Image (cartoon, rainbow, N blue to C red; front, side, top):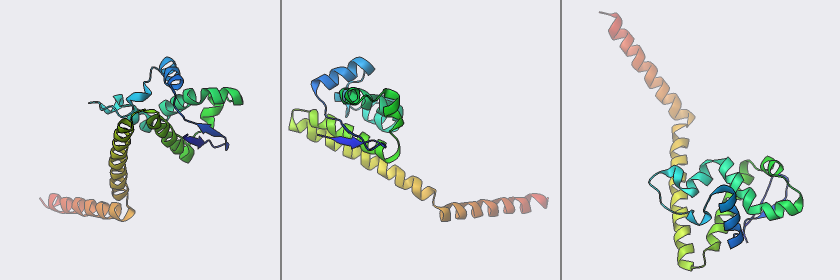
Length: 160
């Protein structure tokens, strides 16, 4: 069963059952089984929403973990206060793993895992491109080129 640890060192299970699906749907209107559904608009895709909005992720995690949180006497505010950084990323991975593991048909689990891996690959490529664009040497080179261009414009524009 998928688990993650919060910043307080507490371990929480993200195992998904029918009761979990019902609880999340009733509380948030979110269908966890639509995780890998394709949508023409990214903001409508559950996986995209979970990965791009930490508040949505935290809300879903809270409802998924609610029975354990109630038993431990941890409030919504306390739970959210213990999520951030690396543990939030681990919680997202555990949640996705819990959802995928719920699918009874191995083919559905396989399809969901492939879709998630494809999204992670594209996301990694975007991060790599951003890292390259933010490379200090590349920024310095582009800045120097812009300064040289401005200087050239100034020289040609001031002589006339």
